Amino acid sequence: MFPDCSYQHITFTMPDVLWHIFRDNRDKLNDLIRIATQTLMDMAKDEGITVGIFAAIHTYGRELNWNTHVHASVTMGGLDSDGNWKDFNFRKDRIMRMWRYGIITMIRELIAEGYKGISKSSVTTQYERSWLVHFDKPTKDYKHTISYIGRYTKKPPIAMSKILDFTGTHVTYKYLNHRTKKYNQLTITANEFFEKFIQHIPEKGFRMTRYYGLLANAVRGKLLPRVYEIFNQKIKEIKNITYQQMSLISFDHDPLRCILCGNQLMTAALIIGKTTRQFLECHTELATRKRLPR
Image 1 (cartoon, one colour):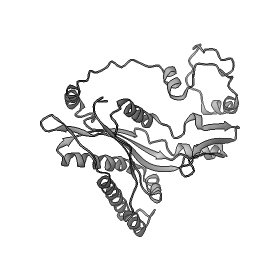
Image 2 (tube, helix red, strand yellow):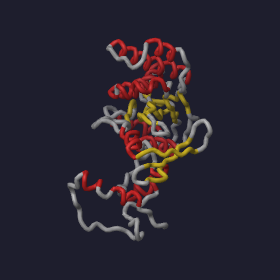
Image 3 (cartoon, helix red, strand yellow):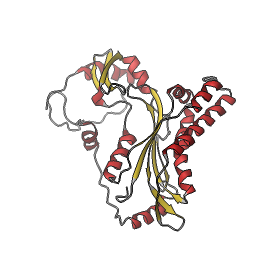
Image 4 (cartoon, one colour):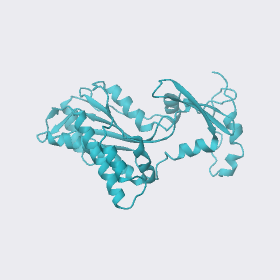
């Protein structure tokens, strides 16, 4: 992150009647993030600058439902052809129109190829609507930006803290209702819960997080040193962090603390090759066992 640079955090959304198209055509999630980031790079290109973009695809809503959208964080400025920094503000109305046009054009191409999941008239109706592209307030707080990026890089479809109970056959979890701004509880069977959850697992090798512009792997080695020089920034050494520390920071859970007695666990043996059947034989007992208070 560049401490003296402003960042714009943007969420690219679409009408809910279009979400299922990306579940039916999961390969098109590549196009989803490409279209979102291309709008930003095209606007920056018109100004003769290269910006830095982090973007993450999300396929889930707060109820674990299928909801396709893209989160992006972009520098409000970039390098020009002479290697100088130029500040820049993105226009929300233009971004929305470019995003909407790109998605609708892609869907129309799908229909032309034989996709039957939505009618041409429905697509036209959605094209004539105003779409929501949410712009957070610009910030120079790089710690906030790091928190934003970290949250959307590693955020699971549902946080462990939202799962309230598991009886062995049913799961109860809570979610924030956008309309009421209050938490609702939902109890469903374990099979229904797993079906909701696994639909958000990406295909092997699919990258849900991407980097563009100044942060792209192909050019970052050349361009980032110049950005660091402009902002008089020194690169800090990154210290290794253990799995136990990450779990405590992210989930407030110590994986090496015994759930029965509370003492620290020590590795006694490493066993590789447990079968699915062996895990299923005791999963209910493990999941329903109550943790002792700290």
